[in-house]
Image (cartoon, rainbow, N blue to C red):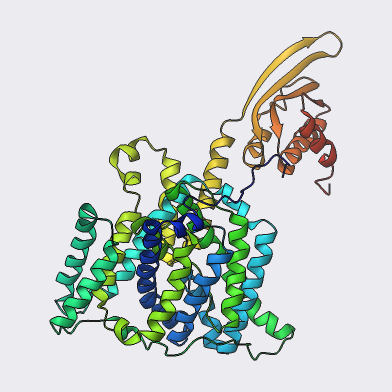
Length: 504
């Protein structure tokens, strides 16, 4: 990587923490946003605990410690990190096969790996994520958020449906009247009050699992510190680290775009790892950035600073420990309404508009659709992003390979006699150089052949191997080949590798 490559620099978004603390209006926005996010975190954390096979306390405490830790350590202000489904799916086999202590050991090792990846520059890889993958990521996210609400709308009392509709009406209509109080908070309070006053029997937060009644405590897993333990947990810890970082960094990039402010991806990467270490030592199940709750915080509630992230964690702990009985009666219909509107607001509707579809190159649409399809099929945003990037790379290589052209001309050279001159234009790499071999007239060419690469560039060993094969095929017919016009980098690569890539 050259020294002139762009780097991500830390730049605190406006308004900053100090500005928010000095402004009652901005501080109110941050406080209320943190409260709304805390309420939305509770059922999610409980659900993810069930996926991981642990007690609901493990997911709730993880959400508290992740949110508080990342508010100080993270590189993207206003982003929410907590226990997530992606991490729960990765570590669930450890809990099932080896127990709780091994699960916590996995979280700790995963956090340590994330710290190392962050320090060696994993965050800079975000520069290589194409826009079409990002659009697919956003659209898949919106679909997954909506699909996560479907279980709360199936086999439920009929009263749930009008309550969800009423919640959506509040979320759509209230911002047109006033933005003093976040519409999600109003919807949650209004529907909870209506449920209590009307004595309705509908699914509520308490039905999702038992809420804790004590504070989290320091915890050290009781596992043997040897190579056998490392061999058991390392694959899961590595998967957790990569999945968590991909999801967190993609979410950070999304928030960058929404707020028009940059963030420090390197700091976010090692910050996520440190937050997971803190979470593991308090007996939590680990986690990463939560996209749905981040959208509630940033896009719906308008938060912009670390205050909202910190308070989301604090409010979560206060609510479940100090006001568990009150939180338990919040109807799930209210939270479902909030999340449905988050999914609608997150989806990039412009990307599927007929005019956009007509103008967009097919390759770009293929990348976007493959990202969406794989993500929705696997319920794993990280896998979807990786597949989307691979599809984008393949289509890009195929497109660039077809740009390479070869032009042949036979000229009379007084010094050497007839000479076949091949002028090659375009970039030469594995996808284009594999076809280069077939573009020469080996039988009909005169005894001297010149390959002019002044208008091309050698990028890899595959190209050098192809040029060696071309030269060898001419040599078998007693003909000589001269390669000219190489730029400095191409000449250096060719000189280093030519003749060294075959055993024959």
